[in-house]
Image (cartoon, rainbow, N blue to C red; front, top):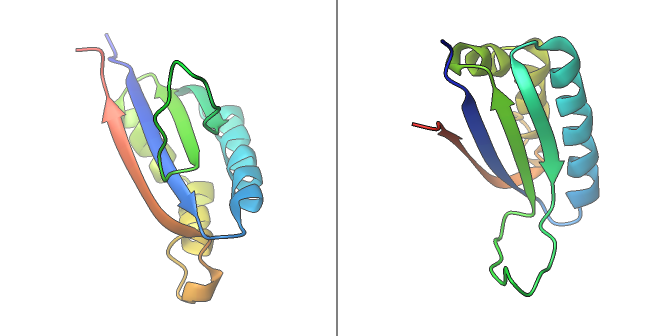
Length: 111
């Protein structure tokens, strides 16, 4: 039986690019949900203030994704649209074109 994989990736856009990056992620995850049957859920989120949760993070955008198994996540990472997204906005040869200051990605299971 496949074991679901939960992905939390946190993103800090360069100053002045938060809205643009949020929109780009919405488009990217929409494409992910449309084309990848192994992607069960995918959300682009921002932290909201709440008195019961006073902590904050420097990462202003958080992607929450669920895949049916690890191979489905690997497939996602190797799609043309994810590879192109990284080459265009994160690992561009021209550093001025990069829109992300810092990011991290972590995978979780229910075991």
